[in-house]
Length: 364
Ligand code: TRP
Image (tube, rainbow, N blue to C red; front, side, top):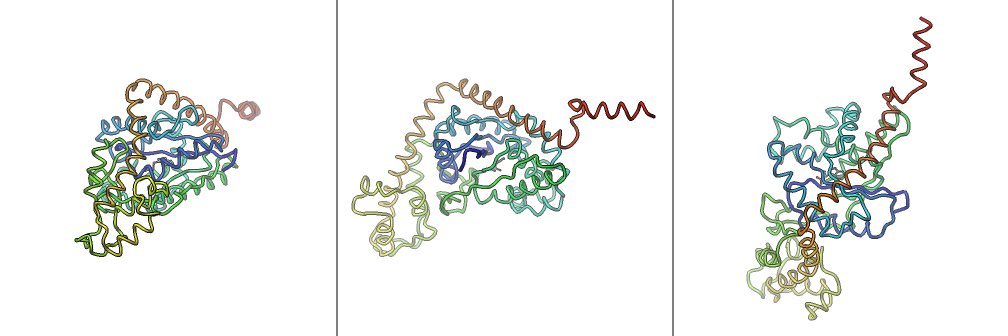
């Protein structure tokens, strides 16, 4: 990171944020924010993108905007240090997307692997909304309007960043150096790329009901941990157990730190010792789950408490968002002014153009 770094990332407000978001990206964002080694940092709520596949459910998106904002604040994102804003409030993003649409072919969008999978997941095969189909273009606008250099995101967003980079190159090639190429910043370790659901399914998803939310109560978290998927062949405590695909161990990989063992389970020095015992046999699931529960509670309790504080003054949260939108809009407006100039559609600020045309017509 360097002083000219511009960090930008966002989330679709389709539900409260869960611990998959936390290990995959939120935790890192807070670290980046607090390290302070950047020129600007933006975190935004991608409500317009959420609407691309929720067009008949605006209330869901509207309700989740504030939930996500609360989750951000609860995790420690701080509007004094970074700009938090809502995508739909920045009309410049629509304008930029509209120009970008001329730089991308339909077949290129069809080949975007993320769009392909998501079309399948939503059963959109024969009736894809154009807005959904083109959201990689709008996402390129989100990124470039703020001249982001660094986009912290999961592996699944790689194709989006590739598409954005192509658009930037094409734009700069045609219109001259105007936009900045973004780089993805992936999670530091593999477990954090994708935390499975509590049922062992590949991904936490609201519709599968397998998420642990940042805003869950201590009781909810405990209940979810106790019913977590482990190793179906580990029937009796003395049976040897498997670590691979065992959700409890995957979560321990993502959350446990050396100091947790001394504090909560001094019989073991580290996770490798616990794993070895489990694999040998003689270590019951419930003991491992109790340990995981303690670790999760330790991590989530401060988040819960901060959330409760912010929930006491919701109008102040909206006010914070409004201020963030104003800050963000000023930045996007500057980029758009450069874009219009580069594209030669800045007619009224171009005295030279007006004089030249006047001369042309006078000599007719
Ligand atoms: N597509 C992202 C997601 O589903 C959200 C998003 C929208 C985003 N615009 C972005 C992320 C720009 C990073 C940068 O999570």
